[in-house]
Amino acid sequence: MTVLSVPAALLASPAAASAAPAASAAGPSVTPAIVIAVLGAALLHAIWNSLAHGVSDRLVGFGVIGVANLAGGALLVALSGPLPPAAWVYVIASAVLHVLYELLLLASYQLGEFSQMYPLARGTAPWVVALVSVVVLGRALPITELLGVLAVSAGLLALVLVGGRPGRKQLPALGSAVLTGLMIAAYTVVDGLGVAVAPLTAYIGWLFLLQSAPLPLLAVIRRGRQLPAAVRRCALPGLAGGVISLAAYSIVLWAQTSGALAPIAALRETSIIFGALIGTVFLGERLGRRRIMAAAVVLAGVLLISLTH
Image (cartoon, rainbow, N blue to C red; front, top):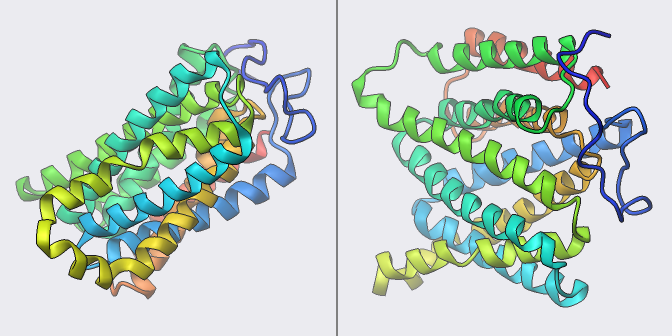
Protein backbone atom coordinates (compact mmCIF):
# COMPACT_ATOMS: atom_id res chain seq x y z
CA MET A 1 0.00 0.00 0.00
CA THR A 2 1.36 3.41 -0.95
CA VAL A 3 1.94 5.84 1.89
CA LEU A 4 3.29 9.34 2.19
CA SER A 5 5.51 8.44 5.16
CA VAL A 6 6.31 5.38 7.27
CA PRO A 7 6.58 6.48 10.93
CA ALA A 8 6.26 4.55 14.16
CA ALA A 9 3.05 4.49 16.19
CA LEU A 10 3.37 7.49 18.48
CA LEU A 11 0.11 7.64 20.34
CA ALA A 12 -0.71 4.15 21.57
CA SER A 13 -2.06 4.34 25.12
CA PRO A 14 0.50 2.89 27.56
CA ALA A 15 -2.09 1.79 30.13
CA ALA A 16 -5.19 0.98 28.14
CA ALA A 17 -4.52 -2.47 26.72
CA SER A 18 -7.60 -3.94 28.36
CA ALA A 19 -9.86 -0.89 28.60
CA ALA A 20 -9.37 0.63 25.18
CA PRO A 21 -8.34 -0.30 21.64
CA ALA A 22 -4.62 -0.79 21.19
CA ALA A 23 -2.36 0.07 18.29
CA SER A 24 -0.84 -2.84 16.51
CA ALA A 25 2.89 -3.30 16.06
CA ALA A 26 2.58 -2.14 12.47
CA GLY A 27 0.93 1.10 13.48
CA PRO A 28 -2.41 2.49 14.64
CA SER A 29 -5.42 0.63 13.32
CA VAL A 30 -9.18 1.02 13.34
CA THR A 31 -11.03 -2.14 14.34
CA PRO A 32 -14.68 -2.84 13.44
CA ALA A 33 -15.61 -2.12 17.08
CA ILE A 34 -14.03 1.33 16.82
CA VAL A 35 -15.79 2.04 13.50
CA ILE A 36 -19.19 1.13 14.94
CA ALA A 37 -18.57 3.08 18.15
CA VAL A 38 -17.40 6.25 16.39
CA LEU A 39 -20.31 6.12 13.93
CA GLY A 40 -22.62 5.94 16.94
CA ALA A 41 -20.80 8.91 18.47
CA ALA A 42 -21.23 10.81 15.20
CA LEU A 43 -24.99 10.30 15.34
CA LEU A 44 -25.07 11.40 18.98
CA HIS A 45 -23.01 14.47 18.11
CA ALA A 46 -25.40 15.47 15.33
CA ILE A 47 -28.33 15.01 17.72
CA TRP A 48 -26.95 17.27 20.44
CA ASN A 49 -25.97 19.92 17.90
CA SER A 50 -29.49 19.90 16.47
CA LEU A 51 -30.92 20.21 20.00
CA ALA A 52 -28.65 23.20 20.63
CA HIS A 53 -29.62 24.77 17.33
CA GLY A 54 -33.33 24.28 17.99
CA VAL A 55 -33.58 26.19 21.29
CA SER A 56 -34.92 29.74 21.17
CA ASP A 57 -32.08 31.21 23.23
CA ARG A 58 -28.94 29.44 22.09
CA LEU A 59 -26.63 31.11 24.60
CA VAL A 60 -28.76 29.85 27.50
CA GLY A 61 -29.12 26.48 25.75
CA PHE A 62 -25.35 26.12 25.49
CA GLY A 63 -25.13 27.23 29.13
CA VAL A 64 -27.49 24.46 30.24
CA ILE A 65 -25.45 21.96 28.18
CA GLY A 66 -22.40 23.23 30.03
CA VAL A 67 -24.07 22.65 33.40
CA ALA A 68 -24.82 19.03 32.46
CA ASN A 69 -21.24 18.56 31.23
CA LEU A 70 -19.90 20.13 34.43
CA ALA A 71 -21.91 17.73 36.59
CA GLY A 72 -20.84 14.73 34.51
CA GLY A 73 -17.19 15.80 34.62
CA ALA A 74 -17.30 16.26 38.39
CA LEU A 75 -18.78 12.79 38.84
CA LEU A 76 -16.07 11.19 36.69
CA VAL A 77 -13.34 13.08 38.57
CA ALA A 78 -14.75 11.88 41.89
CA LEU A 79 -14.73 8.29 40.64
CA SER A 80 -11.33 8.34 38.91
CA GLY A 81 -9.10 10.63 40.97
CA PRO A 82 -6.21 12.92 39.95
CA LEU A 83 -4.43 13.13 36.64
CA PRO A 84 -0.76 12.29 36.11
CA PRO A 85 1.35 15.48 35.99
CA ALA A 86 2.23 14.91 32.32
CA ALA A 87 -1.45 15.04 31.32
CA TRP A 88 -2.27 18.48 32.69
CA VAL A 89 -0.84 20.43 29.77
CA TYR A 90 -3.09 18.48 27.37
CA VAL A 91 -6.21 18.81 29.51
CA ILE A 92 -5.77 22.56 29.99
CA ALA A 93 -4.98 23.18 26.32
CA SER A 94 -7.94 21.06 25.22
CA ALA A 95 -10.30 22.80 27.65
CA VAL A 96 -9.34 26.20 26.22
CA LEU A 97 -9.78 24.93 22.66
CA HIS A 98 -13.18 23.44 23.52
CA VAL A 99 -14.40 26.74 24.99
CA LEU A 100 -13.30 28.56 21.83
CA TYR A 101 -15.01 25.87 19.76
CA GLU A 102 -18.28 26.27 21.65
CA LEU A 103 -18.23 30.06 21.31
CA LEU A 104 -17.52 29.84 17.58
CA LEU A 105 -20.15 27.13 17.11
CA LEU A 106 -22.68 29.32 18.88
CA ALA A 107 -21.80 32.21 16.59
CA SER A 108 -22.10 29.97 13.52
CA TYR A 109 -25.58 28.83 14.50
CA GLN A 110 -26.70 32.37 15.22
CA LEU A 111 -25.41 33.67 11.89
CA GLY A 112 -26.14 30.87 9.43
CA GLU A 113 -28.31 27.91 8.42
CA PHE A 114 -27.74 24.74 10.43
CA SER A 115 -27.55 22.37 7.44
CA GLN A 116 -24.89 24.60 5.82
CA MET A 117 -22.83 25.72 8.84
CA TYR A 118 -22.73 22.27 10.46
CA PRO A 119 -21.12 20.48 7.47
CA LEU A 120 -18.63 23.32 7.04
CA ALA A 121 -17.59 23.26 10.71
CA ARG A 122 -17.37 19.49 10.97
CA GLY A 123 -15.93 18.93 7.50
CA THR A 124 -12.97 21.26 7.97
CA ALA A 125 -11.45 19.11 10.72
CA PRO A 126 -10.51 15.79 8.97
CA TRP A 127 -8.06 17.14 6.43
CA VAL A 128 -6.48 19.45 9.02
CA VAL A 129 -6.02 16.51 11.43
CA ALA A 130 -4.57 14.42 8.59
CA LEU A 131 -2.16 17.22 7.65
CA VAL A 132 -0.99 17.67 11.25
CA SER A 133 -0.68 13.90 11.69
CA VAL A 134 1.71 13.68 8.73
CA VAL A 135 3.65 16.95 8.99
CA VAL A 136 3.87 17.37 12.77
CA LEU A 137 3.44 13.87 14.23
CA GLY A 138 5.08 11.99 11.36
CA ARG A 139 2.18 9.60 10.92
CA ALA A 140 1.60 7.48 7.82
CA LEU A 141 -1.04 8.60 5.30
CA PRO A 142 -1.90 5.83 2.81
CA ILE A 143 -2.96 7.01 -0.63
CA THR A 144 -6.54 5.88 -0.03
CA GLU A 145 -6.70 8.09 3.07
CA LEU A 146 -5.39 11.00 1.00
CA LEU A 147 -8.08 10.39 -1.61
CA GLY A 148 -10.65 10.17 1.16
CA VAL A 149 -9.58 13.52 2.62
CA LEU A 150 -9.80 15.13 -0.84
CA ALA A 151 -13.29 13.65 -1.32
CA VAL A 152 -14.43 14.98 2.05
CA SER A 153 -13.09 18.42 1.13
CA ALA A 154 -14.81 18.34 -2.26
CA GLY A 155 -18.11 17.27 -0.72
CA LEU A 156 -17.77 19.98 1.89
CA LEU A 157 -17.24 22.65 -0.76
CA ALA A 158 -20.27 21.35 -2.65
CA LEU A 159 -22.39 21.44 0.51
CA VAL A 160 -21.43 25.03 1.21
CA LEU A 161 -21.98 26.22 -2.35
CA VAL A 162 -25.11 24.19 -3.13
CA GLY A 163 -27.33 27.11 -2.16
CA GLY A 164 -25.38 29.51 -4.35
CA ARG A 165 -22.18 31.46 -4.08
CA PRO A 166 -21.91 33.05 -0.61
CA GLY A 167 -22.34 36.80 -0.55
CA ARG A 168 -20.73 39.29 1.77
CA LYS A 169 -23.58 38.95 4.26
CA GLN A 170 -22.76 35.26 4.69
CA LEU A 171 -19.04 35.72 5.24
CA PRO A 172 -19.26 36.11 9.05
CA ALA A 173 -21.20 32.84 9.33
CA LEU A 174 -18.80 31.02 7.00
CA GLY A 175 -15.79 32.42 8.83
CA SER A 176 -17.15 31.31 12.19
CA ALA A 177 -17.84 27.83 10.84
CA VAL A 178 -14.31 27.45 9.39
CA LEU A 179 -12.74 28.64 12.64
CA THR A 180 -14.96 26.17 14.48
CA GLY A 181 -13.54 23.41 12.28
CA LEU A 182 -9.98 24.49 13.06
CA MET A 183 -10.75 24.33 16.79
CA ILE A 184 -12.15 20.82 16.31
CA ALA A 185 -8.94 19.76 14.55
CA ALA A 186 -6.79 21.34 17.25
CA TYR A 187 -8.51 19.70 20.21
CA THR A 188 -8.68 16.38 18.35
CA VAL A 189 -4.88 16.31 18.06
CA VAL A 190 -4.33 17.54 21.62
CA ASP A 191 -6.73 14.97 23.06
CA GLY A 192 -5.16 12.21 20.97
CA LEU A 193 -1.88 13.00 22.69
CA GLY A 194 -3.50 13.47 26.10
CA VAL A 195 -5.30 10.12 26.31
CA ALA A 196 -1.97 8.41 25.64
CA VAL A 197 -0.52 9.63 28.95
CA ALA A 198 -3.52 9.51 31.30
CA PRO A 199 -6.22 7.12 32.51
CA LEU A 200 -9.15 7.59 30.15
CA THR A 201 -11.88 8.19 32.74
CA ALA A 202 -9.78 10.73 34.62
CA TYR A 203 -8.90 12.56 31.41
CA ILE A 204 -12.57 12.76 30.34
CA GLY A 205 -13.68 13.93 33.77
CA TRP A 206 -11.10 16.70 34.18
CA LEU A 207 -11.58 17.85 30.58
CA PHE A 208 -15.33 18.32 30.98
CA LEU A 209 -14.94 19.78 34.45
CA LEU A 210 -12.53 22.47 33.21
CA GLN A 211 -14.21 23.30 29.91
CA SER A 212 -17.85 23.46 31.01
CA ALA A 213 -18.06 26.50 33.33
CA PRO A 214 -17.45 29.47 30.95
CA LEU A 215 -20.67 29.29 28.92
CA PRO A 216 -23.00 28.98 31.95
CA LEU A 217 -21.20 31.97 33.49
CA LEU A 218 -21.53 33.92 30.25
CA ALA A 219 -25.25 33.14 30.14
CA VAL A 220 -25.66 34.41 33.71
CA ILE A 221 -23.81 37.63 32.89
CA ARG A 222 -25.59 38.30 29.60
CA ARG A 223 -29.15 37.36 30.57
CA GLY A 224 -29.29 38.54 34.18
CA ARG A 225 -32.86 38.57 35.51
CA GLN A 226 -34.18 37.02 32.30
CA LEU A 227 -32.14 33.87 32.88
CA PRO A 228 -34.65 31.81 34.96
CA ALA A 229 -37.39 32.15 32.35
CA ALA A 230 -34.95 31.34 29.54
CA VAL A 231 -33.65 28.28 31.41
CA ARG A 232 -37.18 26.95 31.87
CA ARG A 233 -37.75 27.14 28.11
CA CYS A 234 -34.64 25.19 27.17
CA ALA A 235 -33.89 23.07 30.25
CA LEU A 236 -34.96 19.74 28.76
CA PRO A 237 -33.14 19.98 25.38
CA GLY A 238 -30.15 21.59 27.08
CA LEU A 239 -29.73 18.89 29.72
CA ALA A 240 -30.33 16.16 27.14
CA GLY A 241 -27.79 17.76 24.82
CA GLY A 242 -25.26 17.92 27.65
CA VAL A 243 -25.60 14.24 28.52
CA ILE A 244 -25.48 13.23 24.86
CA SER A 245 -22.44 15.40 24.09
CA LEU A 246 -20.52 13.96 27.06
CA ALA A 247 -21.32 10.41 25.95
CA ALA A 248 -20.43 11.13 22.32
CA TYR A 249 -17.03 12.63 23.00
CA SER A 250 -16.20 10.01 25.64
CA ILE A 251 -16.65 7.36 22.93
CA VAL A 252 -14.35 9.30 20.60
CA LEU A 253 -11.67 9.66 23.28
CA TRP A 254 -11.87 5.92 23.92
CA ALA A 255 -11.36 5.31 20.21
CA GLN A 256 -8.43 7.74 20.07
CA THR A 257 -6.45 5.60 22.48
CA SER A 258 -5.82 3.44 19.39
CA GLY A 259 -3.58 6.24 18.09
CA ALA A 260 -5.38 6.46 14.72
CA LEU A 261 -6.29 10.15 14.85
CA ALA A 262 -6.93 10.94 11.16
CA PRO A 263 -9.31 8.07 10.33
CA ILE A 264 -11.22 8.52 13.60
CA ALA A 265 -11.54 12.26 12.93
CA ALA A 266 -12.95 11.42 9.51
CA LEU A 267 -15.34 8.80 10.84
CA ARG A 268 -16.71 11.38 13.27
CA GLU A 269 -17.65 13.55 10.33
CA THR A 270 -20.35 11.17 9.23
CA SER A 271 -22.16 13.49 11.64
CA ILE A 272 -22.21 15.82 8.62
CA ILE A 273 -24.66 13.46 6.94
CA PHE A 274 -26.70 12.95 10.09
CA GLY A 275 -26.74 16.70 10.72
CA ALA A 276 -28.00 17.54 7.24
CA LEU A 277 -30.78 14.96 7.57
CA ILE A 278 -31.75 16.21 11.03
CA GLY A 279 -31.83 19.78 9.75
CA THR A 280 -34.16 18.74 6.95
CA VAL A 281 -36.50 16.38 8.82
CA PHE A 282 -36.81 18.15 12.16
CA LEU A 283 -35.80 21.78 11.57
CA GLY A 284 -37.59 22.34 8.26
CA GLU A 285 -34.43 23.21 6.33
CA ARG A 286 -34.17 22.46 2.62
CA LEU A 287 -31.97 19.52 1.57
CA GLY A 288 -32.43 19.11 -2.18
CA ARG A 289 -30.88 16.72 -4.69
CA ARG A 290 -27.59 18.59 -5.00
CA ARG A 291 -27.03 18.61 -1.24
CA ILE A 292 -27.78 14.88 -1.10
CA MET A 293 -25.18 14.27 -3.82
CA ALA A 294 -22.63 16.41 -1.99
CA ALA A 295 -23.30 14.53 1.25
CA ALA A 296 -22.78 11.25 -0.63
CA VAL A 297 -19.34 12.47 -1.76
CA VAL A 298 -18.46 13.27 1.86
CA LEU A 299 -19.61 9.81 2.90
CA ALA A 300 -17.52 8.21 0.13
CA GLY A 301 -14.47 10.09 1.41
CA VAL A 302 -15.11 8.93 4.96
CA LEU A 303 -15.42 5.33 3.75
CA LEU A 304 -12.17 5.56 1.79
CA ILE A 305 -10.35 6.73 4.89
CA SER A 306 -11.89 4.19 7.25
CA LEU A 307 -11.54 1.21 4.88
CA THR A 308 -7.80 1.85 4.63
CA HIS A 309 -7.46 0.25 8.04
